[in-house]
Image 1 (cartoon, rainbow, N blue to C red):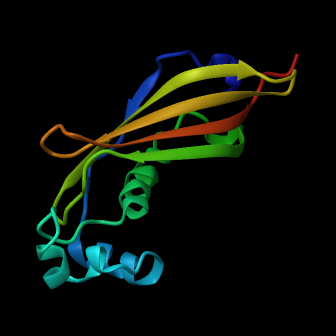
Image 2 (image 1 turned 90 degrees about the vertical axis):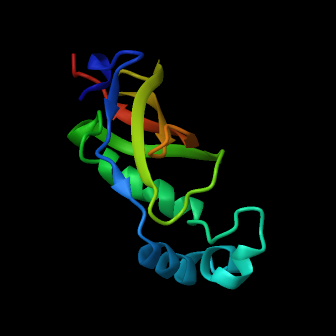
Image 3 (image 1 turned 135 degrees about the horizontal axis):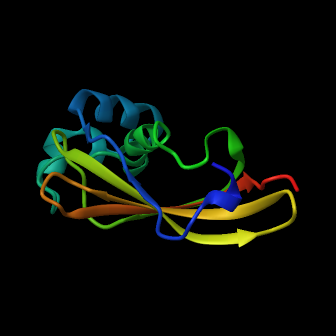
Length: 143
């Protein structure tokens, strides 16, 4: 979708994604190898009581589903920035739901604008577990 067609408040929901223990441990061993993500005995003695999913892995699981319904399609020029904030842990077996909303639009030139998308990610209990704010450079309609 072209920048000119985007509206503040536009929203899409992603398909839910289940966080599988085997995938979270494999991801952690390769990219975030700390005991909180990989060692059941260690994690049992933490405030969480069990291993938790790496935050980036949890986010990317939802992001993958967002890309299937994203606002921009072929009109995306490039990503500009992203910010993740984690509110609650994600555990094996959790199901994550994402809601992406256009939260800011700034026209930069005749050719492109900057679109901010906020993705709120909740678990199966409706608890907000993380928020992502991504800025994307999007094509404008040619005049």
